[in-house]
Length: 419
Picture 1 (cartoon, rainbow, N blue to C red):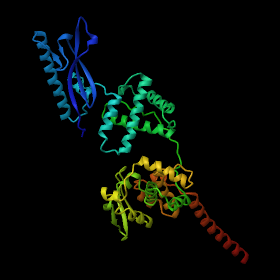
Picture 2: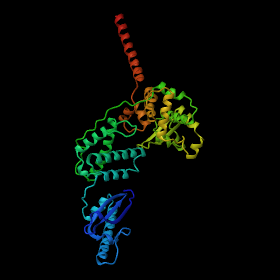
Picture 3: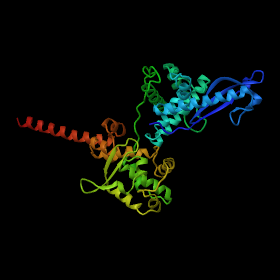
Picture 4: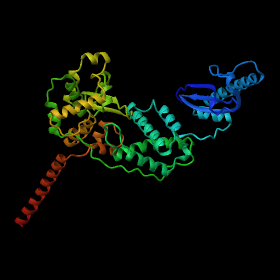
């Protein structure tokens, strides 16, 4: 179902195109701030135009006829809007204009598609994901201005060459602030978001062919950083006199032993604590990103942290397990914690999820199938991206194998000597 739209109609004249003091009259359709103009093939004397009322003034016959025509146009434009709403099709300034002119096959533009996608997905996508789409939208606009010297292009103009040029633009983009140039995978993420929007247009038959058919994204596999056991222990044992650092440390450690992402930790409340199948307390919640259910048995350190903040002034007010803090501030304070704990890695809150998957679970012999369940993944392949078996576990497994092989060799030698 389409989100609510704002729709208006106004009439205006373009004095810059006046000939002999007579100016052409236009209708302007505005939907959600986006405009589309219609030339009405009528002219009016500039001095006879009332810009506030949007019509001709005076009782002259030609002005009365013009105003009567404007009323007819107004009625027809509103009818076109109502027809599109009843048909449950996409309503925008261009589509209303096309219906009014009887040109319903008029092409949609790229930025119209982007606006439509972001509006339609505003309720189903998380705030963080939607924010990424807005960033991609900004880069598309900047690319169009620089490459095409235009504010928009029709979807039919999207070609393989367009995609290659857009990729090249992103790779060569130089930020004006302190940020670093985009890495390969960041560029591919923007291309991937554009691809999802273009696929939507293709499914809705706004375009005849998919320009991405021959385009192959090139991702570079990167190792997911996590904390080793000694690094995690250094944070756990570090005491801070500053309250904000103590809170951030506790939230990070909590995530290291539950595998929950930032937003899921922030949303936890007493209703998420239940008695599990084993008679112990479990965290039962739903991941905001994927809407998948997760059920996590509570380890002792998790119990301690929840108890610590029970009755806290801020948690009592908002009825959550932990006080709220923005993800941006949290990650900023984690940089301080890393420095104070002598950790050289780029410490982020999401690293806690990787640490849970590797140091806390897999390296301690928890099967990857169980880890996948705890992380809320539907595919083990996804878990393998987040969680790799660290060298310590590899060494332990090989030592076990070495002992077994050594034992077999000793038995074989012993049997040979006896014979």
